[in-house]
Length: 134
Image 1: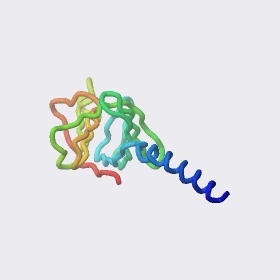
Image 2: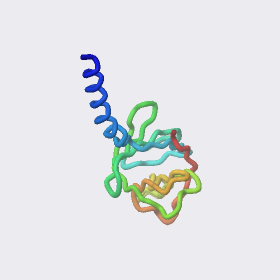
Image 3: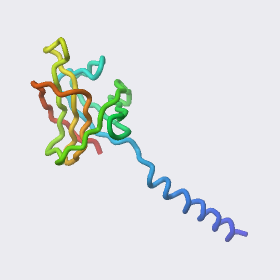
């Protein structure tokens, strides 16, 4: 009787294990801002933020968090570059109709080809160092 129970339990784990190994969790990174920037209508102050995203292509769901609190949820485009980025960077551009304020337009991740694109990068865009999450 015990051997049948162990055989059934083993069969269940064997069937469930492949599904667990293919389940994808959210991708994430940690960005550090040296100046206040906007994401949509939310202004983020200088500091360190966790960035998580799910999806591919033009419909990527992005959450920006600080101290375990979600501050911004938005969508972005996941762009695959020809080459991996040489360093982490947050690209900013002037906010339309207000050249003194900046908005995040792109986040690049060191040693990865993927980048998050939030909008068209302005001609006078700036780049800030960023730290990659574990």
